[in-house]
Length: 389
Length: 140
Image (cartoon, rainbow over all chains, first blue to last red; front, side, top):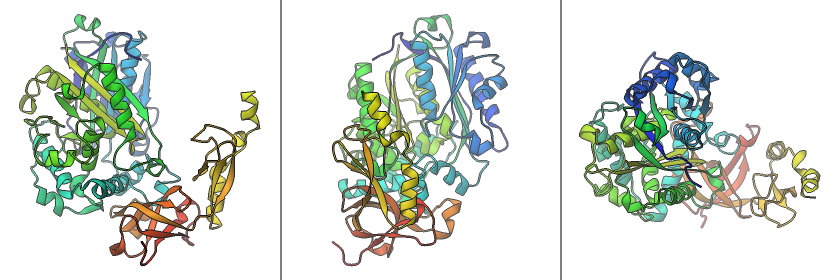
């Protein structure tokens, strides 16, 4: 398994993330996509196909059949357009689909985007919509919410490995510190461990500050071959691995609850495809939908042993100047989590890092970066590894 | 011949989910047992996860007790369950080995991983949502 043609990302674009009011899904997507096209130096006639990650414009905006609507609004005429839905990994899957279509030779230049407009609904209705990403019959019907799923994992992680609420709060504190410097981020306010621990309970032991917010936003990438990239202005960053796997839908059907088997399998595949070691990764954006998810992701990818990620985060080892900078963008927690856009936005941040244009967020000497995008409670995993050319 | 086997199996005609719902409505649990390797699954499934055989049949799961593997107290609930919040949800391993997620009844102060629970059903609810587990006092 591998990429038949070498693939690169040559353009990136993003909207501001946040509660953006009366803007629509199509408008958010068009802004991000057009920015990515400008950055790459591609025009409408260069683009062969579109993949767009979106969880649920159906529920959030009463709009289905999003795939043709978005290129329509972007004025991309008569183009193959596909929507990917894999819960919170919808964006990562759109990119992976784009990569496969380019690597295979089917298309030469592809637009991979992600978008979500979530704040039209009140929190309780968003909670209900997101719960549809768990098993409706055997989980959601039984009163499980998404924070609830991760709370049950956190409880078990605390029980088996001694992980503490302070360690989880430290993930949130770091995320907010990084987001302070990210102009796209939803939150620009510092928090403290005490403040995080004093915030209201959402699903015990997860407090409000352990949870990523409800966010509007879009992100887009232009994908082509390393060879073809020479024809365009955008600085190319190579995609050296793309890995995806699934797992059981329901958490209770898995042998353990303190991590994701799907992350471990996809990470092994990704490192094998990239022909690099874990220690070669300079910067990583992981799926911190909840603080415990960042702890588990770092352990599952193999950067830390089980039970050691929490203490490492508390010691500051995952800060921008630490030995493994994690989520310098602010992550889902503080940059925001517009579901379908998240996987694309993670790659946007890594491309900026590898190009060396991340400004105050820049990690020193970043040459290899990685993204981990998780769907549902780990039913889908999409991982990418990128390298400076 | 393999195709024949599939045609003859319950897979083409099964309505296991409906059978599960009907059983729950009558206060018991049904799963499936693989007719080739003997593995038992709850909720029921048409193809054995262990040996991939499509020859499975519905069986009653007779467990009455289980132990709590993990739990959470839900404070922010979806609209349909807001009236119950805060409520406890947990994953239980039944004495027969299978695992299910459900609302846990009992004193939240008594909650602890490993505690024993009793299978029960909410009389006011229809369908899979009526499954409950009740914390057993002085368990362990």
